Length: 327
Image (tube, rainbow, N blue to C red; front, side, top):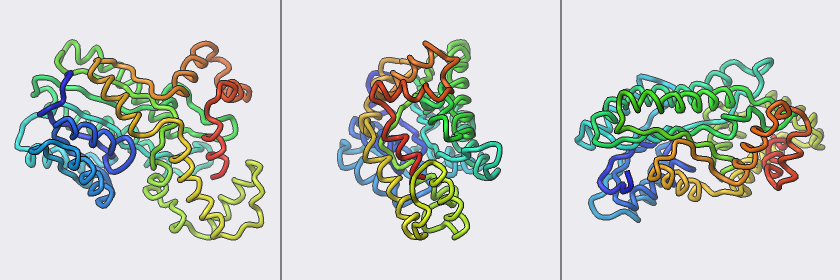
């Protein structure tokens, strides 16, 4: 699929970040697009930005859908096919994701399961729901967003990160297994697994909203717990009032987006170039390439305290580590 003109792409998590940028770039090439998200206002902005650059006649539909809910996914699929008046799609970008569920040992079960259900369940159930429509097309491509945490289950030795990492490993394994399955049973459908490093998106802010941990939603008890966690990481916040902790959380989200070494638009371009080239493995960012090589060279050391120092010595993840420690 070298040309996306006239094709139909489905993008989950299309309200912000890489999902938005994929919609903008695809629509700009004359590809019809269907996006889903939980935030109607964000999707409206994506639609406006995408159609402003699209050729006349390009269609973009938006749909509210929680990808952790199989029933909502099936309704989303039915709406896409009905509104675009077709029985097939060409591109499925399983992009939606949140961060959360850090500790399996003592973290809240509901946050762990919600994170896993979105990051892995969304990929699985969307692939199930849209597979017949992909097979019905003359050419199809599934693009599953994993992460560097799909081959390195860590964001540093002081911060547990279990739900997200488990989900992203599942996405990577599922995608790789589909290579053979599709070649044997639907050879005109391809698959790629995307493994970004630190990309400038709103995932920190969006995750807080989905998990009920947005600053304005947090109770005094939750703020106190977070204050203790930040203090334990070595930051002097013990005397900060609750509103200052809330602003620290907001700043953390801004820093994650604004200080990333790779923008969401740059990431979307790398992804689409990878689809055109039919690459099944798409790393995004110099940090992703460096960490991938370091893990391959010395997998036994990947979770020791010195490993993150090796990454930092090559100029990567310092800002991400600072953001993580700040909240």
